[in-house]
Length: 403
Image (cartoon, rainbow, N blue to C red; front, top):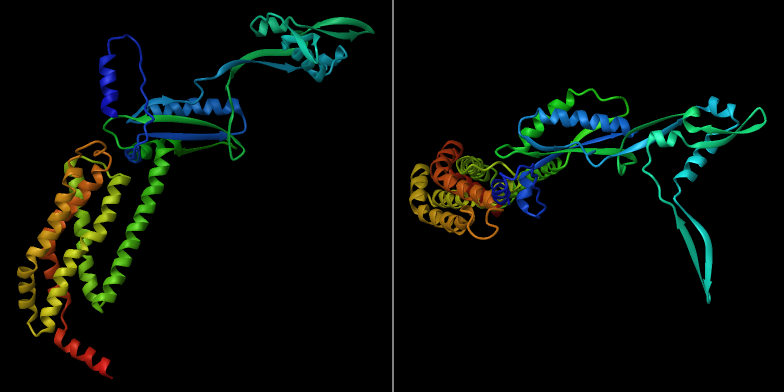
């Protein structure tokens, strides 16, 4: 989608006009982020418009922002009439009477009569041509009043102040508060999280009047929420994996050794993202979640076979070396099947392949790095942490079962 946007801009570079292009295609890659919004809320519309314009100016000074919109570009000029009650009462007029006269003047149609045809009635509406409403023409409007017992015509600008000011075409409310949204796109080559962080610093330094608030929302808020949920899911996955291994190994130490393969996989995934030039996005975080469940298989295969050899009477160092040689082929075969299966996704081949490419890159990079490191790190950890003789512990467990 971004490539199409760049192609259109390059083809229209010589038309002598400013061209803005936006896309609305539903794509999971949107979770990597492409824009930020600032939601401004407060009671007075004019003050909201002033704040929105100033915040748009602040965003222009934030590196990485592009196509900034203050949310009031579609505003229209409105005529305001402020009645001076004392002057109006001098002519026997109330504020309500003045506004009623103005409303009558603004009404440009009236029902003159009704035609009856059979059993149906048709109203005849007379529409008069109306000149554009301006503060100078409205000021010449005369209203019938009284002074010293006599009827007089009073000009509107004699009893009221008339002016014009910009006004919104529509008023948006969120949680019963008037709202304006200042938006900006993220320029190419910039990360939405980093740009949002700089925008938050600028927003924190902006003095807001009492009763008004400005909060960064939009895609950055969605991404942050999704990231928090995924981190929680990964932590829960690691906890469940550990509990399942405790039940299978009947030990707390062996599963702990196996869990060391997870940070190795995460390190490989981050290195793969760095080499491939991808950002840490929600899609990439899904790859870390997948790694949590896959990479422990290699450690389980290795640690379980070491335990079997030690239970059969083999010395610990000899059991570690034998297990490394014997389980090398199964570990490599298990890793290679997954790596090769995800290779097409990691290369971004096919329609829509680029959407989940970061997830595949994380998974493949994590598997390659962790598989190689597992053959060195897990045996070393096992040798350091497993100090009790396995045969003695097995005999004690057998005696406990017989008792």
